[in-house]
Length: 286
Figure 1 (spheres, rainbow, N blue to C red):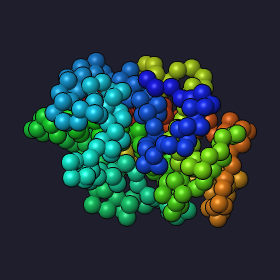
Figure 2 (cartoon, rainbow, N blue to C red):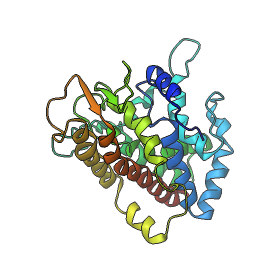
Figure 3 (tube, helix red, strand yellow):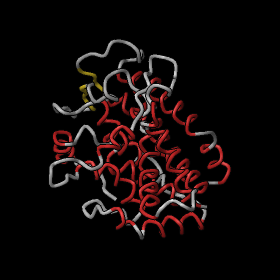
Figure 4 (cartoon, rainbow, N blue to C red):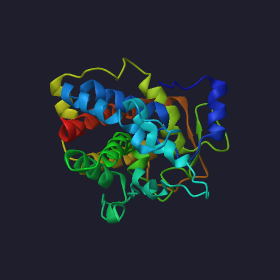
């Protein structure tokens, strides 16, 4: 598992990381490993069995042999180009997020038109995995997409935004770190996720049954609304000094006190993502 970040590496990544990257490697891998630790044994065996067929994806530069590799496959394939220069996976671009305005009533109808949003694709992937008639290649693809998309849904800026491309247009300072390409989205994708995951005991463990049931309760729509609410109550509220719907300034600053105050919320989102992915995998494969 990749670990972030000595200071020099952090500066380099802030300057070079793609704005399209989603939850970076560490967040996605942690969500996937939490899920693996909490699925039923039969589900774990089914996951391994399907991923042994991952060569069917025909993406050798983006392997998916393990659940950790599978968790970042959907981002990795964004970089693949055909000989004619076209990107074969561009069809899935909008599947990683849903632009639900945090300053309006929660509504998935517009952002999820024709199923082109993350929550609709999660539900689609579960159905494909449950259907015994799904061809092997589609089954593998459904699994790797599902593992990734549940992580995406629990990055709040993939579930809610305010007309700023999920915070990508919001230039930001993170503690003492400031570079021209650092923005609110990349902070929640990478630096804050890493800080949250490494704060306190490991999140990758077997959770008690009662805790699993409590966190994994509800539907994909319920989880979408909850993550959208976190975007409103925590992500934007902390960046805009208490009023998430105030006009966004050209540059926002998350000082150390603010970072410490939002780490628990970011940590809980990773935990929720892992346990809810475990629930969906059990439903689909268990």
